[in-house]
Length: 185
Image (cartoon, rainbow, N blue to C red; front, side, top):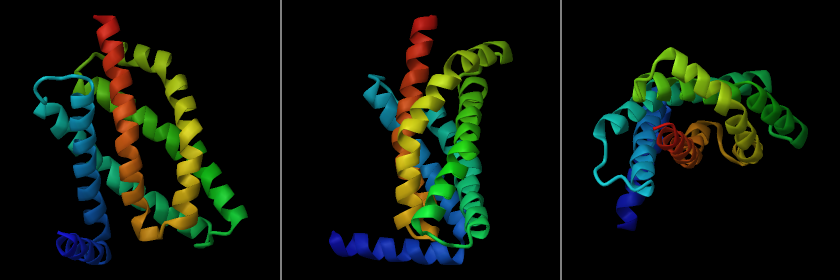
């Protein structure tokens, strides 16, 4: 089993070199789907809602992977590939003040409009109510994750690292969204 995992990892790393954007998009899509499926199971859903799993996968594939890929490429240009303490602090600040709020807002929009099929008025109201608490929660965890990612993870693996952290964050946001639906019903 260990040899199979090592070989799969070796092939994955090759794909990251050969086709980094495509590989990160696929990885993000798969991990987003996994996060949704796990969130459903944890929240007590008896039968997995495949439509939602697929829509999470689409979000990860079309947005999460590509956005992370280009964000980290941009940051490596802006910060000239450095990872000393001062530069990493600037990278964390940059990431937390730009991409973190954007990602959370886009996720909340996508979840409300596409996944739940709610009206713009309902989604707008939900965002007004929940965006600040969600973002504040993100800022409790995000800076530590960004620090580890930018300080210790090689550039080509940063999106993958974020995907797996994002799996946990997706479960958190998903469970928060589900609890609001139950209260609103």
